[in-house]
Amino acid sequence: MFQGKGFYIWQVARCEGGDVGAMGNLATQAQFSHVLVKIADASSAYNVTATGVDLARNVVIAMHERNILCLGWHYVYGYDPVGEANIAIQRIQQTGVDGYVIDAEAQYKEPGKEEAARIFMSRLRQVLPTFPIALSSYRYPTLHPQLPWTAFLEKCDYNMPQVYWVGAHNPGDQLIRCVREFQNITPWRPIIPTGSAYLQGDWRPTMSDIEEFLRVAQNLNLAAANFWEWAHTRLYLPELWNAVAAYPWPPSSSNVDIVMRYIQALNSRDVQQVLALYQPNAVYVTPQRTLQGHAAIAERFQQLFTTLLPQAVFTLVDSSGSLGSRAFTWRAVSSAGSVNDGADNLGIVGNQIVYHYSQFTISS
Image (cartoon, rainbow, N blue to C red; front, side, top):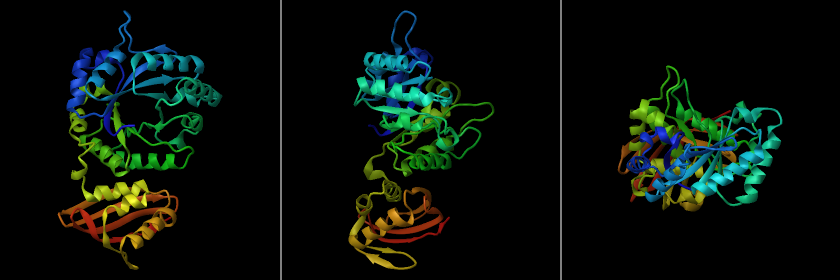
């Protein structure tokens, strides 16, 4: 649907004094690919003034004028699923948003809500069979088994988990766990995570947290990521807004480091995408054997993806070197075990790998 970074908007009137032109200019300066504006709550429209001014629609227009996608989000409760679906359909049509995001949280963990979710999703898809729809909910499905994940996701196109690392400073590890958990439930939907850019009590995320969250999202080959929430961040944590704005995503493909491209290719689990990084006669060396050429290297990665580390999530730990020589360390989590000591060296000519030494240990 889209690539890059974005921000959630809760109350339009609190963002830049309600000046949607200023909001559009800020989004452009920050190089956002998308924003998400609230369009409904329960069975009622949201971000519409008492005099009938549709602020959400104004945001959509301002973003579209700047070639920025605008999605509409909706907090749902499940007490009136048909009414909630109907207001969603109405607001999607009124505002002209590019996609619709369902925010389902605590109320949808109550008994009997699976049927409500199915009624809600069926009504949406009856009217909007191909419109892009995403689910925004908890980061770890294992901690929230009561939520009707399947009932929502089977009719969604994307999964936008709220990876809020409140009380900690390990967003990369939490994002990796989030992706891994969703790989273990059905159906799988492409993940576009939402990160923390807000204060809670005495806790506050750091600029390093923001950069790590975005870097790991790229390492995991995720198409996009975004943050909660525009007005709060601009008012209380402007340095975090600046950190998001400064982070290069999407970067120019010619400027993406080959180590980053290698990790992204691993997370794609596409052997051909991996092979594209190697020269035809490249040499791949492990402590056990030496392989040469695309055919032998392809067989190695096929084994890696299907037997050694099936359904793995790879993440870059550190890298060093430049030009023709790179060294890096990495980790992976898979259904067959984990790697915590991955250590590789690359020889590079013409922006392709000609020599690759790799060693790692799989632990259960």
